[in-house]
Length: 168
Image (cartoon, rainbow, N blue to C red; front, side, top):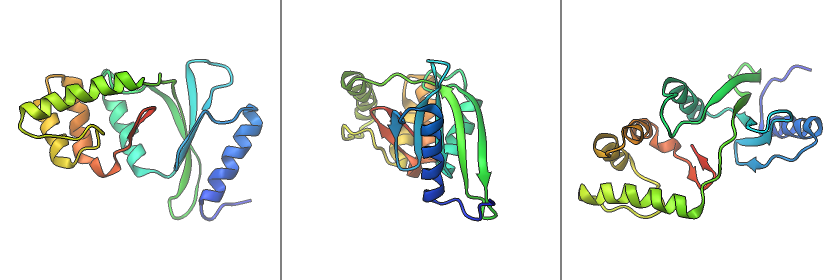
């Protein structure tokens, strides 16, 4: 049966089919993606997502910056189906990421806040920055990997999605 428009309903149906195939519920779920444990490899997850240009840009940036310590490793991706309006459902195989503890996230946040304070820019503790703040980090943070990531976020800051278990 051809699909004319990839809707949230199609996405949910595909995820439900995966649940039946994998016999597992997703262990991570958001507005645009669900993450499943790979059935064979314990260090790999399968992420199923609806059209998400921000995430696509992030994956492309990650592929170009594989040596950056803040970048997850992607092992392969595919578009399951696509309609004439260029909507699609994508599937990504990637390394399973470890969850940050609250302490890890606070330590990371304090390092960023210190850099911002040294530059005369006070930021809140939630790590949600505006474009100017990402620009400052992209130029002035002492960690070159974080500078590179900050430069990406400066260009894509409206897509920002930072949570305890998720970046982007």
